[in-house]
Image 1 (tube, rainbow over the protein chains, first blue to last red):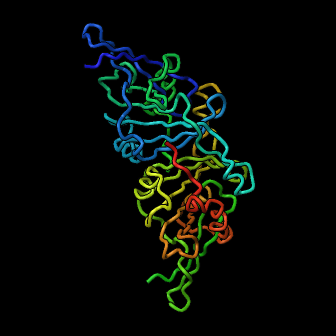
Image 2 (image 1 turned 60 degrees about the vertical axis):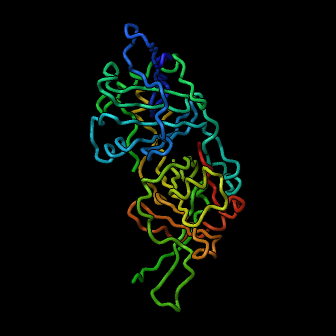
Image 3 (image 1 turned 90 degrees about the horizontal axis):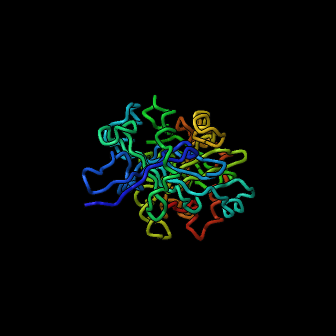
Length: 177
Length: 177
């Protein structure tokens, strides 16, 4: 039985991707909070297919890939909204760093590649309309490179921010053909 | 029998990814050039797994995803060099454009997403040491969004540029964990 608690929050500044939550839970039924946050990293996400890529400037200064499980990819390609139950969207972010090697080879300072994992390395959105009814049918999560869930301060605003794209089932990322 | 000819070339400025070639071929055996260039888009590449992402500034100003077939992904993860026969690396580039939607939602001009397909939309490297012996064991290709092979002027310098990373089997892209 899992008694580990999680906390939920969101980063309003984590634009263009998936923002993350965790929430306190206990093994005591009478203490159970609504399970609106994803507490485990979905297995196999790094093998999922590509939805899109993005670059965030400013404080984030990262480059990111957005992947989806089969349900996500199929729904995106079919243009289906809302996304089906079981959809999971994964967002991986790396520091946006210059590639000295590439720049040297090509004679110009223009190439940027993934660097270290930032604290907001992994984010997920999991579609389960019953389980995550309180947050538009989506559970949110964030993990660092060690698999540690994101801090409350980072995760508090996930759902509020994603309301901006409620018309697209709360998902910012569009499919890149 | 295919009598269509292709021309192969490379873009020295296409840093960080895969550069592309096509080469003139004819159906006449005595006129056959060494088949050092890839003339068809590898089927199913958009379903391949992610190797990495990159952003090119300057004249290119694109954001890109680098995908690999199973042979590529497995070899990357195992750190195997040279990459095995049959490896294919795909590079998809899109214009690097601001997302007004994201920026509005998050209150800052910081978010960049894929825009239109540039003329150098698709590039591939195909490993076949016998077939492409003249270019380090790799065939190169570039296609636009309509599947048209890249112009000779774009493709001429693929192999020369990739020589800069001969020690990594001529591949610029590193795996993003």
